[in-house]
Image (cartoon, rainbow, N blue to C red; front, side, top):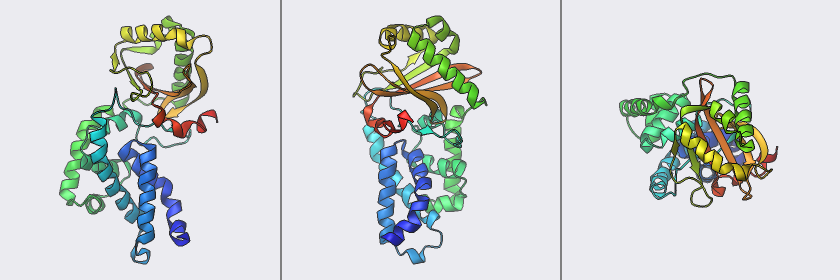
Length: 286
């Protein structure tokens, strides 16, 4: 076991990155990678020429199996489904942002695998073919089809990180102080709001579209936000987007991520489902 761990542990972070981008769940990604480790222990490791490639194939195939059941579970999910939020280090490479993770949900498992392995992780189609057990031409077609589906959700505007965090700070201040005039000035006219409570915590059951309805929502929430009932824990980049983590009046940790285009907030992603936030409870305070 020690020998297996010595060769596996340096690869674990990379494998978790693959699994998380496939599944959108930190807990599921960690479970898949642990399952891959158990298989690594049982494998003939001396016969494996490139452990990273071998383990990436194992993880991808396990994720494909997971996605089949995950898709069925999400069909009965209460309200909008959002990926589990990951707060990234400031120097993290933003290869997959939150909007793209959500767009990947519209793909078939094989399209998702082909797109991520090729467009995100830079693998050749021959290796992808061996991984998902299709020929190279089919993998190329899967990736091309996926690319067409998610093109609109790729970031269209480059923005300095510091400016994004300034807007996040202004959004937090305006929404928590009940300053609707300032808040309206930060929002695009066609802003969209998605909140994920998963039936576990109060959240919108449907997305909200348009600045007028967004202001109505925040006006109604102002009484909960003001008076110190919404406490900022930290600012940070959440799945590649500027945002913040708060402790709300009901004692729930909440993440808010902002998609910003041309200086205006176009989408607001709020996660309140405690099942998706447990992994942040310690990190949120640092």
